[in-house]
Amino acid sequence: SRTSEQGLEILRGKSGIGELVLLHVITRAEDREELEQGIQGAYAQLQYLGRTVDDGRIRVRLLLRFGRPAEMICAMAVEEQVTLIVLPRFGASDFIKSLPIGSTAFDVAKKAKTPVCLLYPDIRLEVITRELDEAEFPLAREVWLHYHQQTGDPATDRIFGVFVEGMLACVARCRRHPDGLEVDGVFTLDDFRGRGYARIVMTALVEACGNEDLYMHSTTELVTFYGQYEFVPISESELPATIKARFDFAMGEMQGSNVQPMKRAADPR
Image (tube, rainbow, N blue to C red; front, side, top):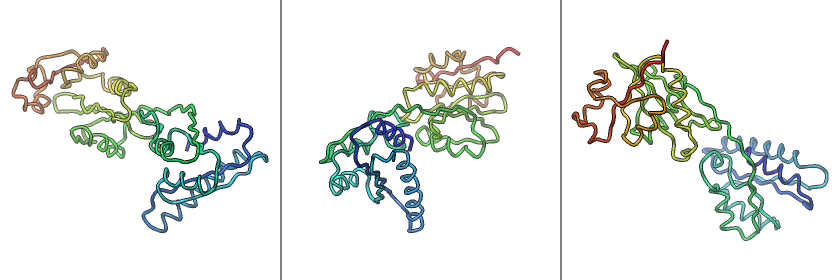
């Protein structure tokens, strides 16, 4: 992983290291074939990492084990009689989330009988914002499972997303109705909140779809947020009929239901 590579980069600059044991723990395999493939792939990665630190001064040993990462790291440290456990504070997937420390690093620091050194490599996330193609709509559906369980329809929808290290973290949808365009489904996964991804995805959506009037139903606490994209509050009667029909559950009392209709006028041609 990137965190492992950057962690080893830090170690390369340290003196006094006589032996380095590189351990990879395989956590799961559905069958023997998958396990063998996992072993081959993991060992190849360990060999690559080993070559990056093997400068002739440090003895490098490679170990593969199967089980729970934290438990196996602690056990192997005792078995191999190591003097220090060194690992990045984030694992392969933890570092892309808004966490103070990864789950494996936390458990190792808590349980290990051997001294533990947590490295803080400088990780710069790859963040890409773009429109999803039809084959990627199921990715948005997975995100929306946490938000009203919405789905996307390629026939009517354009979905925009923010990808963090290849993982879809934030989405927004523009749906074409017979009488207008509706913006909804703006949602960021919990682990990625507080980074401004909702702003980024809304900017992309408005740039792509803003040549026509856009309508939405905003919660009242987000009216100011959408106002930054030139959405203004309107009355329920100003909504196109098909868009209004989606929210008839409010029985005309939208203020009481914490929902505010909004409109963004089309960009000048």
